[in-house]
Image 1 (cartoon, helix red, strand yellow):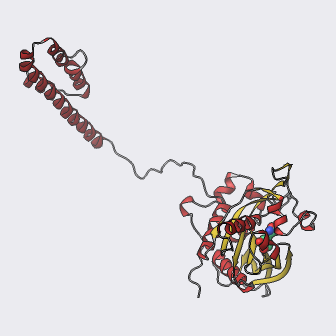
Image 2 (cartoon, rainbow, N blue to C red; image 1 turned 60 degrees about the horizontal axis):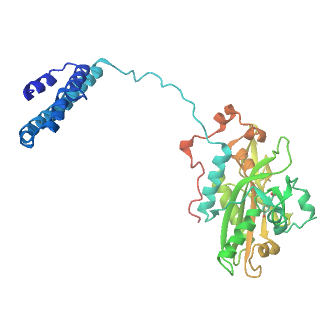
Image 3 (cartoon, rainbow, N blue to C red; image 1 turned 120 degrees about the vertical axis):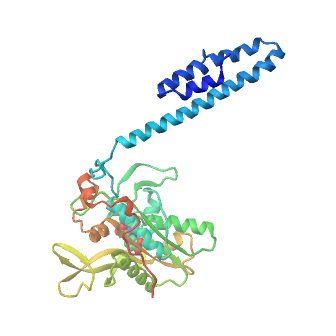
Length: 368
Ligand code: DAH
């Protein structure tokens, strides 16, 4: 029979982890001597087993505990030795690893959603593959309406199951219709609605200031007693917050869109410094000019009806803004096409750190 004190002394004396492992195998491995003793228990008489069993068990437990303790001690000693021997030069530059950045359009979309959230607008979305009813007809542009032609639409060869022509949406305005229908369904009789719908839109158009895919953000408010004053205040509050300037001056010009009546185009005053346009001040001031930034108006009765609301009870305003143009203006980029070339050098120059998102917009603050 093995002597437990001798076994433990031997384990405690192991000088390296390798020597310790050899001892573990010698005693507790498959062919180990303690394992061998355990196997003899099966062949013993019950009386003998009662006497020998606890002894062998004590031996096994003693060896296991001693092995673990010695292993711990040897590992700690090894770590201490490494810590004492090795040094780290914290002044060495860290190896550079490539870091992605947030595309200016994504950044500006976030900023827009944030500013409009402050004004009580929820974000709504709709499909980029639309049917011509949502994209045109419901927006008061029936088939053969001349305004359809202005949109240079990408059509699909096949119609959908309802027999409607399918296309890449030419603007975010169909989300107006989808949101109204959804709201009217959930609340028969109607309910107030305040949404913005940012997203991609498509037109067959390509030059220095047009790309076949670009971005818009649509706004829609439906409520009772809504008038032009609400529209003007909202746009002013939005533009001031987005450009983070109090001196934004708007000019409202009469225009025409089939889905609004009256329709209004909104310009902002700006000046040019060092070839860069800076928004602010009246466009009529010396050295200033006006720049169109968005289309808007009071929602046409036909559109309110198409959305499932009673136009005698519910009114609203809507607006559509080119997001790419806003991004260029705010961050001083001058070539629209570079936005979508996917050139990593451009992105690392104009992109935003993911850690800063959101946001660079000032927010609307407390209206006074
Ligand atoms: N959908 C228009 C376009 O793409 C922009 C627009 C104008 C949207 C007036 C509106 C609006 O909601 O009221 O040219």
